[in-house]
Image (cartoon, rainbow, N blue to C red; front, side, top):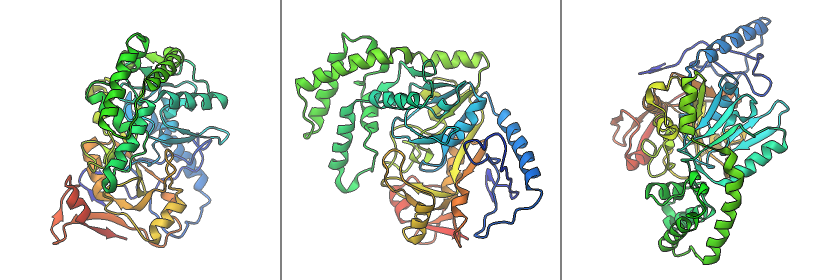
Length: 439
């Protein structure tokens, strides 16, 4: 099967053992398309030899990744990016987040099988030799960040000196979360379906230039005036938001405490990363959300407020496009989506329920059940065009093992049968088009 620049091999590769089996199933060659069937294949006597060979081959591929590489989602998020980042981080000096905020939930496990649900801290934190960077493009909710750090350290994961927060990153306040909920209520039936973590309002503050950055916490003499401007703006915009002088005092006092605790983490990460690159250190960028939620290329307005595609790497970390090398697109063997918005291959019947239960498709951040459907090749091809992936990492193939029938969405058509050649930006067309599938 060949789709323009997207080509999938027909040779399955297995790696049952190997160095990554300590926490996760093995890493398959990202460009492999593994044949699947409702019937489980018989295990041959030579499987262990093949596994050793595949594991060695996987190590070679990982070692050959570019000095600056990235892991990005191809669909609407929840593809398993954090798991891959955790595996790859063993071969990189730095793992960096470049966009988004606590709306990106990544689940990883340590060597004892302990589960960690991270939202702000990069997934490389379990690898003790890795430095984790929260870049300038991220919006940071400090209470949430400290909660993650406390949870990691209480489970024996050292964070001291290993987490760097950009002084240019914008702060996300509790009232941003309140405003997020008010905004959703205001939209009524056309609500976006956000995580209500305040991401959109925080980015709005950034764009209209009344936001507060991490570096501003070093100047507490001006913080009350800046907070007053932010809170007054929210009160003027939303009738349900009640702003009082007491609220301002409480916020200022809280952020005085936060500033003291955060100080050891605050770093000029633009200088740090570029200096590290000049020293030949390896940098792995961990994308949050996914391409089909991109503010420009996603199903607008049902999108996130940042750029989880390749372009967000440069703007979110302050590095030149010329230094960015291999990008790995993570794609689930089926498709899921959280919240509202077009979903061309959604399965609203029992098939969708089976996928949800078998794949445990419930949000890391919200706990909401995810909408489920078949793999959308049209959307995947579009994602590959936008990002220029060097390889694809196919995840959750095992979820399909017990299904009698597996479908792929391979083409879009208008209601009159006219082909739609690419993933459209027209929301009405997306809602009305028909999907051609193959078994």
